[in-house]
Length: 192
Image (cartoon, rainbow, N blue to C red; front, side):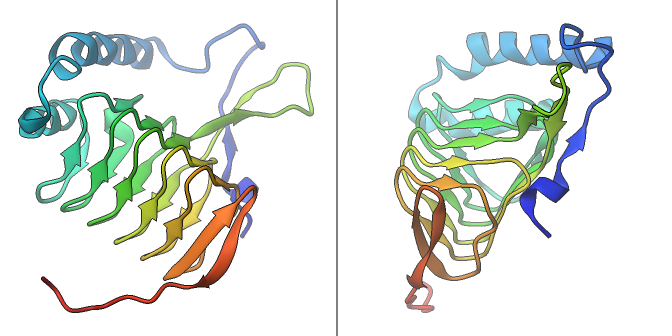
């Protein structure tokens, strides 16, 4: 299945109307205020507090992940973080649909996970959303962009600045625009 096949449209009367019900818009506004006042100003070592705030707003958290104080999460209720997952400095998770970041997966600085786009085949430009799945032990390099509907396999390394528009197979090193597999990822499976 192609990532574009995983996109779903949201109901909008026109290009100028919000696709979100009032309750969701209020929830997004409340989260923005909490992010600005209670999340963003915290020092690096207070990541358990930031994880607590995400959990309070509906994020599904396993174990002890790390979330940078400068990371942006659009909708915590659409986020699942595995044990030791890491969202690095200035990374943005624009999760208009569910985003899963597996155990020990890392989003390096300035990574952008984009869970939404528009249907450009009509003048109404309805919002299209698609989930993103980042597998266990994956590493998404600095300034990489991951588009909606993409599944990144376990152990994938997506190089810095890559544009990930298609699924990436497990345990591969990938890079480019568009991002594509370059070779298998060697990995010492001994736990340290």
